[in-house]
Amino acid sequence: ATLLRDAEVTIEYETLLTTTSTTAGDDGSGETKQITLRGELARCAQHEMDHDRGVLIVDHVGLDELLSVNGQTVMADVEDSDGRHGDRMERAYGREVY
Image 1: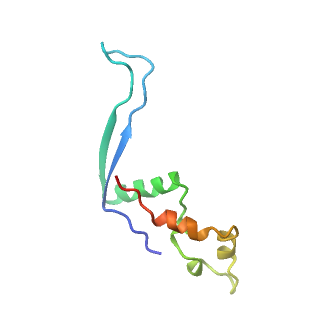
Image 2: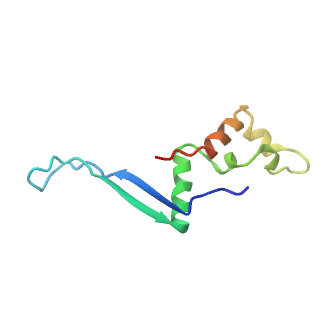
Image 3: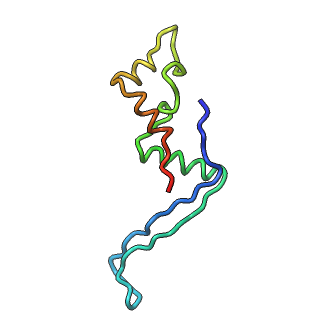
């Protein structure tokens, strides 16, 4: 299966809160920051964000594309044992864009 990935991705994140403050007036709260990743690094980040959403590589392929061994559809049977492979595929291809 071909996984579609953006060539560039901007990630917004918050820094961790600090327990001690060294700057007068600093309440120790984190900051919101952004980083833009390109190329292979952007692809890797999107792969890891998939895992944060519970998406695995097998969720990107149809049951008919999964490996069969000696004509047996073992992988497809395991992957759809709960009948929810279609739901997982939908989540895999659904992208939240802000």
